[in-house]
Image (cartoon, rainbow, N blue to C red; front, side):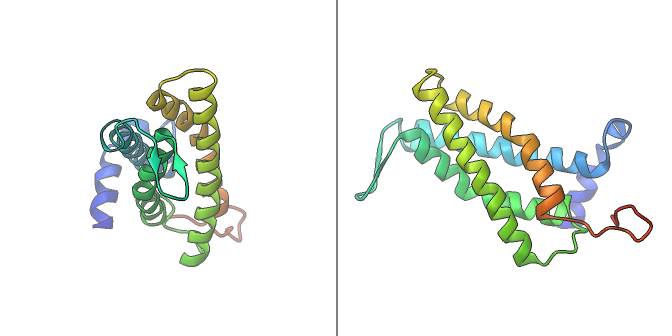
Length: 166
């Protein structure tokens, strides 16, 4: 399955070869697909599952856009990790549990940033929640890529000074 996904993504790479490395293209495709899934799940959760109503859990009540953020996260988190580990950054020398721990740290940071940005945009700037989610996502993408590349899925330095990659 992994090889088929890589072949499919790489098939579309040639027109982008002059403007970005293959790894960046794979990240854009995988991350972009997962981001679209996340935004779609947020929209469905907010509008249809929660019906824009507060979610009462007994011990806490969540605003519908915060609950939708959590619901979408539950699906996009594992998909994002697997795509990054096996498709984008597949030559990392780090053990899987270390990658997962680091991924959790970065994603938790992203989730907090998402939460803060969405709440500011919705509560104080009166944005529609799905639009606020899109703005937050755009802001976080660059941070996420650099963090995943240089921290979570680190590649061992080559003895000649470059990076070892596939």
